[in-house]
Length: 239
Image (cartoon, rainbow, N blue to C red; front, top):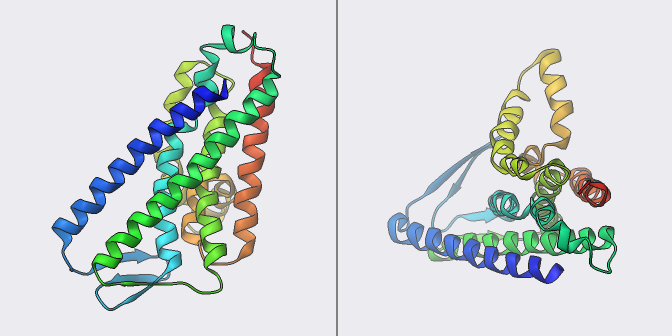
């Protein structure tokens, strides 16, 4: 049964890569060699010819695209439930089947992250901008990929135990996550409460890329926890 998911992932990655290719070509064709200004929590990063750009900025952009891709595969267990009369009669543990689906999907999210990163680098090379790698680069890329996988795990957890209507969460989660991230900037008890909730918001870690190993551990911990819970819940869903 996991072969079906492999085919789904293959098709979705082709679409993802194609859309990114169109975006890259469009930016190159329309943007030329003009400067790009990216506003962040620590100031504004300028991307212009001759300017060195830290990998952390690229990891942030790639992580955002990986989260978008995760929205397309994060409901695979929910989708598989529609054929459970067939899939659940196979001589295979439901838990093992869910595990295989999750491993395939999570690997695809990491691939989507790398594809997005390659697209960003292609644009920068055309603009004669030099991406700067340092000792923290592997950690920054690990956190960026983790944001995508955490988003996937959260979506899988929130949809695997419900009917087809739960797939709408793939779109609903975006404004909710962005709103939580914005409200987390508030001062006082309300802001503190929102920031506590924001710990399980994958998008909250986008602004933390490059800030240390603690966030990397949290992102991958929650990614693994969400996926593990989904794997445990899905087999127990009543037919």
